[in-house]
Image 1 (cartoon, rainbow, N blue to C red):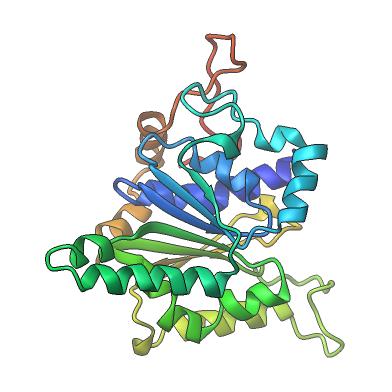
Image 2: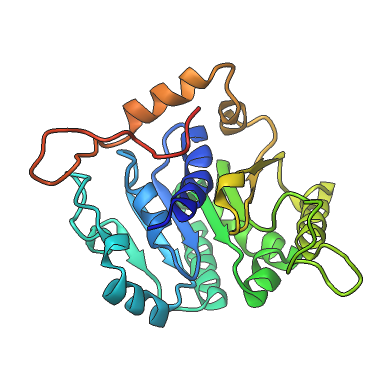
Length: 272
């Protein structure tokens, strides 16, 4: 596991889960979610993790050739294999089918007196979207999907985190077209413009950039479901110590090995 990949996963997951007061239900939309899953399983409060849009062939190859990515043995209260943890669900449906099924659950819940609000309010506390392909860009950054799909999954304190593009650079590279236009910047800017309109239905958005994640996409856009939510005010703290204490209190203690009593730091790169 490269330091770059670990830095990417930590920057993707922890700002949002530490901002939420008590995250329980999380969804991850990603081709390759194993490193993200491992970071999420560190939290004591997590009750359900749903993995969507997983590239199953890539997952099988990863489990065969890089089994360390599925190793949760340093977390004593988690299954030895991260995917075997009872809180983890891998959904084989495509994104459209899954959204239709979730929407059907919401509609059915509202048809039962007294149950609709409980089911609807906060179906997922945090949604993580890893934009790694043209197809995912078309779906995850689409105004249609955000207005008519993803918003059904969130409650007042929910967040959506989108990993897309990187901070603009003075160095030309593969992300530029023949005219020198930075494609990462364009797609990131277009998405920010879309979610910033009054019609988007979202609250604030904050951009977090982790240079250590390069050459992977280094930009993480954190979107808050409601203005002035508690989650928003917890996202940025007056001191880094507040975040460090949160990690100590809310993470499972990690052992250096299953048989050892020595503990590890909560994260390798991310801190307050």
